Length: 119
Length: 110
Image 1: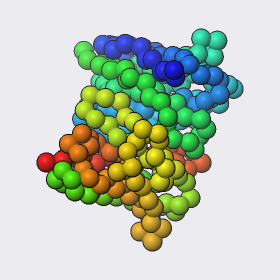
Image 2 (image 1 turned 90 degrees about the horizontal axis):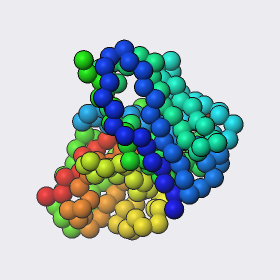
Image 3 (image 1 turned 180 degrees about the horizontal axis):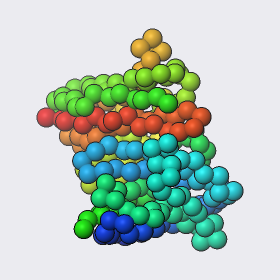
């Protein structure tokens, strides 16, 4: 059974760093892209970027380039989304999502990780 | 870059048919596939239509998708509405450098 299991909710202060994870199982982790999607409270879905764990090819939305870092460790079938200095505006639900190739639709979603940034 | 514009909300009665539009701001709607995702409150999204008009297994045939090059838009049509269809629906497409989601449409079935 294909699963994407994300790390648990986080509560952080502005300026702190954070790395959340998305562990894939039940499939060949290096053969599918993993994307990250942000959903701010009460708002819509925003595409942040994607990574191909097979060769670490990574692409970012211009809106998120330089704001976050997407990475993957294929030895443990896990993708990451990290911030070096959180802002209150980073408060959101973050979803990871699997798709076969860049132009293919998402076929599996993680359950989401809620990040709350508050002083 | 381009945008995908959806109506903010639609409502319809059970048993009726509703259509949600998704208009591409620049570039041809036919140049890249359009997907549709359903998101119920408190849940992750799920795919209801992919590649313009294909349904994943498990999605009822009440859901259908199409594109119209003349209006540069895609549409999601749900027939025989059920209360369980009440959700947010997002269209999504892409170009060579990024994916784009529409702003989402809240479907109310009342």
